[in-house]
Amino acid sequence: MVDCAEGTQIQLRRSRIRFTKLGAVFISHLHGDHCFGLIGMISTFALLGRTATLHVYAPAALGPMLEAQLSLFFQHLDFEVSFHAVDTTKQQVIYEDRSVTIESIPLEHRMPCCGFLFREKRQQPHIRRDMMDFYRIPISQVNNIKAGADWITEEGERVPNCLLVIPAASARSYAYCSDTRYIPSLHQCLLGVDTLYHESTYGDDSVLRAEKYWHSTARQAAQVARDAGVGKLLLGHYSSRYEDERVLLNEAREVFPNAFLTNEQDVFDV
Image 1: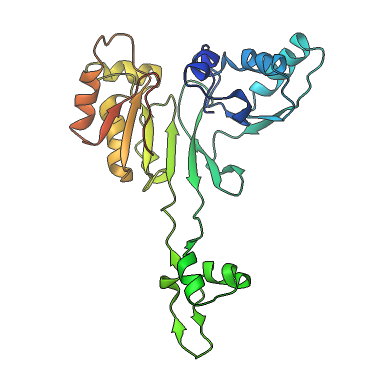
Image 2 (image 1 turned 45 degrees about the vertical axis):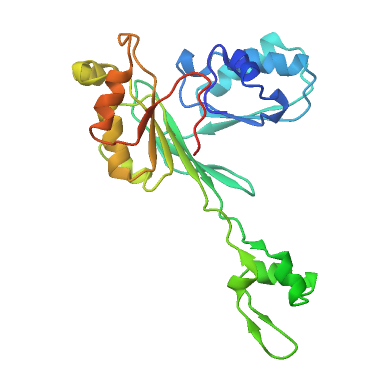
């Protein structure tokens, strides 16, 4: 989960996402609309009998506050809340497992803030079982073939690897750039990302307001997407001054055509 505002639990239930599937929460910064829902969600986990560790990745300042809340509201938890302080000034890998790496992305806001870059690890190709059977290739050779080896038959015929495997789908990547003012060099951290979420609080009519409050305009978000060569751009975090956010979408598409507005319950293919 990326950020955890008030109402997070309601949205999880509306989305029919099982609470037990959530293993880690990544908090971009300590403004309430990004973290006020965390302690309530932890409380619900306790009531549901959770036992698995919950990992929380966030700016260091959240650590003491989270510990104080846990001490105040819970006499005993049947699961561990493991806090991981994130240095918001560095781009570095903060999480890794067998299928994905997650990097922090330094951003510029009114307080320490970072985004997150999710990169799927490249998968090995899939074995063609029909070809394995046809050439009577033993199971013991599966790992070698997945690693790129050809096969030599008993008659000495070389069977190229490309006939024995189906290439795996391309590894996907998703970047989440939370509250931030426009950073001309930000695209260097996002080169070639498949899908980019970038805040777009204001339109062209409020460039000075965006600078004052350390936010971005939709056009600036599109400039980042264009310069990074991303696949698609998702806009969000709109100011309430806009009754119709399509004005933001139109301004973004003038720079980067493959841009989309985000709304509650929307689903996008990364």
